[in-house]
Length: 77
Image (cartoon, rainbow, N blue to C red; front, side, top):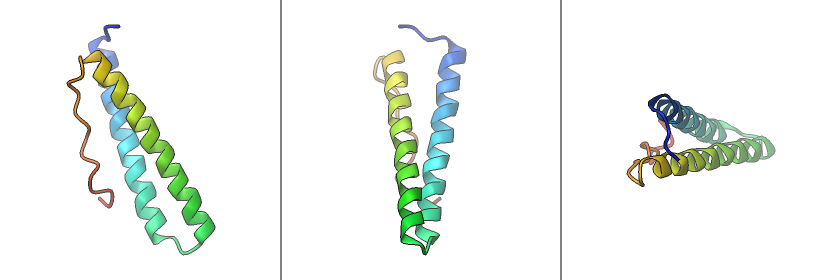
């Protein structure tokens, strides 16, 4: 399936949003003192990471496997 430029740009934006949400969840989970709340925030971050991976797979399929993941190695930024 061929995606339009507008659709590809939306996927790229969505990747950025998911990456930011992952980073925020990681940061706030590290700051949290309540173990139950920390676990909830961690699970939410994992959901965003799953969404990120799914979007990246769609982008890879549309680009013939050439899409690169955004920098998510430093989750504390």
